[in-house]
Length: 143
Image (cartoon, rainbow, N blue to C red; front, side, top):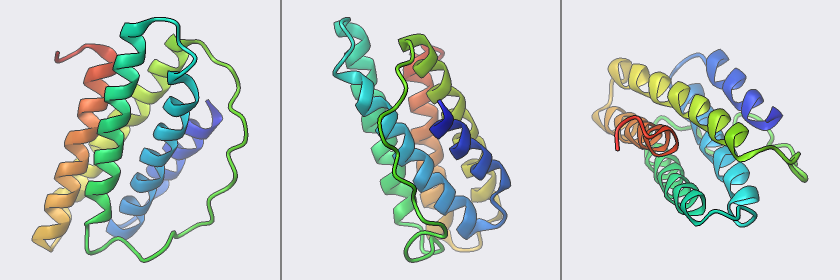
């Protein structure tokens, strides 16, 4: 899960509202890439449905962050080509995505508290909510 590990590291290092929003958008994109690579290969219908619902929430979170006025135009860093992901177990994917989603929710919620503009606060809170939904779906913590 090096893609998700790198996304988490970048999110932890992000300093300031624009950098956190940019890292969050990329992290949501990385979650979508990982889930997309695996949702069609799972043989369990229930797992495929959970992955689909989690991907929907990740897309919603990315879209919410995209509406933040403080999000810089374009990316603060070039996006590397992801290539073919390594084949991990469903449990490994679930754990890695849930961990990154928890971090996303935490960083975005913290960013919302310091954002000066109401639109930035709303976008950060909405994206944090979506990240929590991804975690809840994958872990079953709050069904």
